[in-house]
Image 1 (spheres, rainbow, N blue to C red):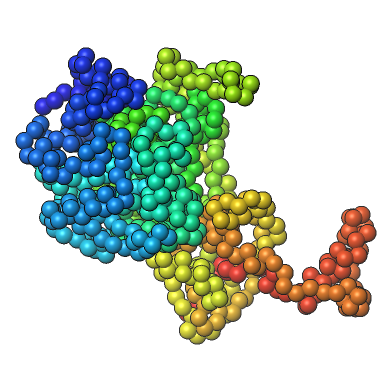
Image 2 (cartoon, rainbow, N blue to C red; image 1 turned 120 degrees about the horizontal axis):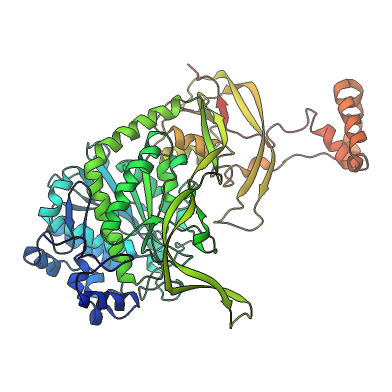
Length: 635
């Protein structure tokens, strides 16, 4: 058996057994041509082990040469056929999976819903010899691992890593057969198909390869990693269909980082432990992640959380990135699934980034085979625990009073003169590497919570919202017989919105509400969403206006913010006189406002509007949030 400690690729902190491989790895780090400087078979022969002693040898199988080399000759990926600096196109990638599926019963390619590009979303399922349909995956007792690629097609590391991963699972029975008895692997080869088709070689200005790649925005210029909750695109709707069919226990979304320079090849933006919460959040933080990062480090890729430094030197410390439900991993968390975005470092050579991503896949698969049953148990426990709570959080903020310590492998940073601007610029000196313990603010506290209602009422007119509930497999009940139930309703007192478009919207950054309790009528065709269901967390964080990525914040209900009927002052003046004469409480409130507010006292229109909004003439629907919180469910 090869010594794992000496035969790992020379990533950050890794060691190579022979001087020749040290020299080749050094050339690779400098971005030299792969074909001329690296034994490519050695490079793909990355090894790692988990504490349980399980060994995966990817690329050439558990033994060097032999049948595995034949498989590599038969099924080389587009990345492998190049010198390591080219990524697969959408067409070549899909052709590759079709060829693999034609050669093995373990691999099936399934066409799902449409995307904005006009091309359908596809998923690849890899199992043992027992063929399975997408609709049956969530019913299977095995753990489900879902990998999503090319959400930002310029960050293509996962595209190429996934093809080799799929091929080796199929071809290397000695390494993978046992794992497939416990885990189903699902891969989305290209999520942002429109962006993948829009190839160029310039838009990733800060990235070291590949030569050519896709574009971040999709065919309608949406960033799909901001669309999971609001679902503006066909991509997001089709993804939701896939996600709920598979019900993954573990979700990986492949990316490349932007920002600071440091030694780490791999970082991850994972489910925030306090936001994921309950049993799963604690388990992920204290058990799963330490094992995962230990495996990555053992393979020569010391992995840390995403370096969320915001342009400052990371050694000063940074906050953990909070993945709200607009993001893929935040969306996964709504359904009690652990999510990791792999974030390889943009300045590392492309072949090295692909290799690190591939190692992450193997580490996750091996760990899931060991821990999957326990993860499934925690997921189901958290699903039922969530809707039995009295209060649930809907917003979080970083707690800067309790930083953790993080071992960070960085470079000394300084401000140096800029020959371009005449000012100064941030400079990382790669001749001065360091390893330090730095502050890491990974504790979040609840900033906003709500008391759980018995359910929510969605009026029949809001079919777009009902449609999103259906897309996310939410259990609903359509009212057949009119009824009356007690409920809480919100009045929207104030919103603070962005002044420039963000992902096709003017997002509401701040929301102020007043809560009113009343009897409301349920009409035939209205929809009731009970809270005692597995989708409860999605329902709450989509429908509660103050939730961090609520549908309200994404402008789904903005029509209620616009007043439709008004008054003419010369006509309403008589009505105002009558209101003041007949309503003593209104008269006192009106006079108090005039005495306390000089501007109001001098503004005739504002005074009449004050009275108008307290009259029967004022439309009740203005600024009334249409979704009601039901205090009891109808019979």
